[in-house]
Figure 1: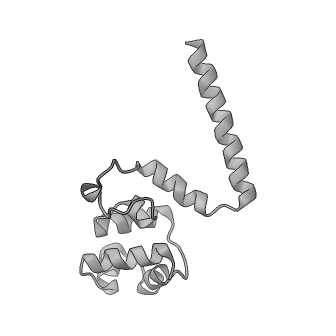
Figure 2: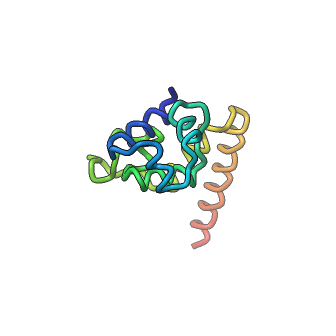
Length: 119
């Protein structure tokens, strides 16, 4: 079972929901949900958002970026949603593409610095 799959299963069980109930509320096929929970496949970001909302947990917790399932349980400030999406996408990249992403971030940092210097 994958880390994300384990978190999805735990979140569902915390809400005392069966997979069929999740299907009824979200339209996610039972077999698809089962594959998500077993690690056979991973949901896209939009599906993660739907499940996080239903389960009342943060995307950060589902993806392993915090140990507190919901923001109210977090002792420190939870990451914002965009950061969570970026982490999820980062994990899907191979090393070459991660290096490319870092170069793009460096370009954006340089542009921001240049803009700040103009002001």
